[in-house]
Length: 298
Image (cartoon, rainbow, N blue to C red; front, side, top):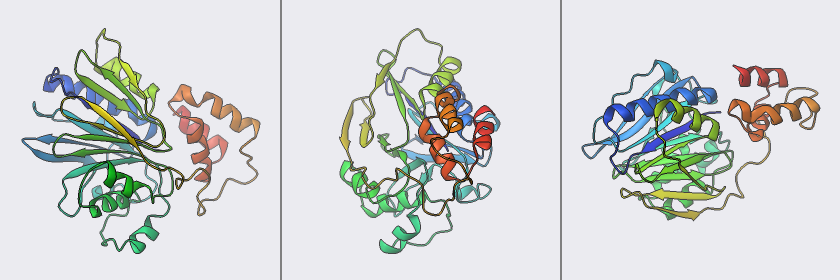
């Protein structure tokens, strides 16, 4: 699995140094779900900037300008597309002249079919997530309608974050987790794929006595945050998303998803920043329970 993380300092209450500290802390906490690559996206002087490298988060050195209000981040555990080729890593920049950045947590297994059926252009990018970028760009605009049209054909597991060059942030909550906190007195939103990772990053990166509000994000929600900090929510149809095992992945031999070992792993998952659904996905990758336990504990 991968991890999404980020901040939106719409109140402009944090200095560049404070934002760097918070983003770095969230990124390092997000290593629990991926260390193959790390990337961020933000706007500076009206231009969208993407900075990513095939390194774990603790080796990254982020430089954030004062005017970067919204920073969208991603740590990667590679499933498709060699992370050594940096163009395969997240966030991805929008195609066809539409300025946005997109990051994805999950696995898509109908990307090749969609590229053919939707007549999407060939690129050197091998990552399955990039089909979401192409489908969104094909809409010719960024809105609730275009995002809905882009994500509803997708099969697999997903949660997306999308940042526009106008500092609009969309959080697209599919069948993978995402937790969003709001600090209204600071004028600050902070998010991460799991509550455990989010709290861990905040503890190190944002010493504050203000208690945040947990903004609800349900499966199928598309949440939009504008530059004033106001958020609105619409929904998309999640019935096409995968809720089982991809057809091309084979389970470990003689492993029942209802076995006592698997039940124990799912019970302990939250303590390590995972969810029971993550355990099912690991099984879908063909990992044995022992390998899953090693991933969780390390």
